[in-house]
Length: 272
Image 1 (spheres, rainbow, N blue to C red):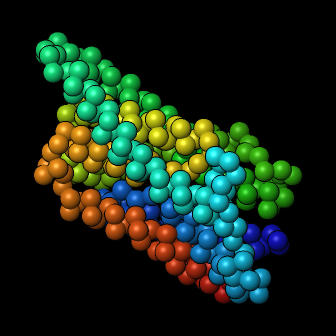
Image 2: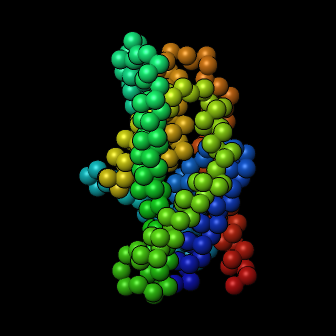
Image 3: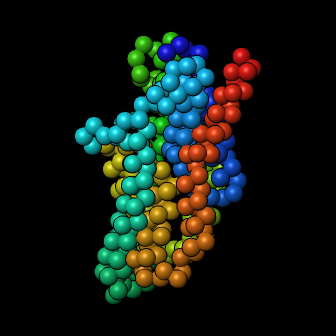
């Protein structure tokens, strides 16, 4: 594949995914950067294949699974679809277990529970970086290989450091609209609920990282919060209108990012 085509496809795919993520961030909707990246790259690859006469849909590796390892578009999509379900189920089971054993707890347990919340948050942060950062580093590795700066699909140290810093800065400074949605607008969490949600999310995301499956942290965490509400048997306290808005954003992410990427690709080809 010519270097110019790779750069155009990856650049347009990233632009489409970033545009959609910025829009959902502004609306305060937890969207999936993984879905957006898949949609953007697939959309730009199909468009580039069609415009260059390389077959359109045949330009994309649709894939599936090699053992437990997802490959291609279908493998990634299956992992992205299964992970929120697992987040819901794990949170439901964990909160049921924790609330059963905490019936006789007194106020002296408040301190240890809050401490466990910090540990669970640290674990979730680690698993988030261990999964989401790999997506960005994978794109960087492809660009470096296409540009001839490396001879193999490897990630240099500077790319790892830059990705980690960008992920940390974005999480700390740019995500408060998402924080308010997940932390307050879906279901009112108690400290025990928070520990249950974060523990289940960490288990799902870290497990996915170990088998090489890219998943959406926001989807897993949001689903785990709904699972906590279900586990407490307080379905009426779950704000279903917010859940519906998130579900709509999840369903539209791939086609929306793909269309944005196609638009960027057309502008790219016209300008160059």
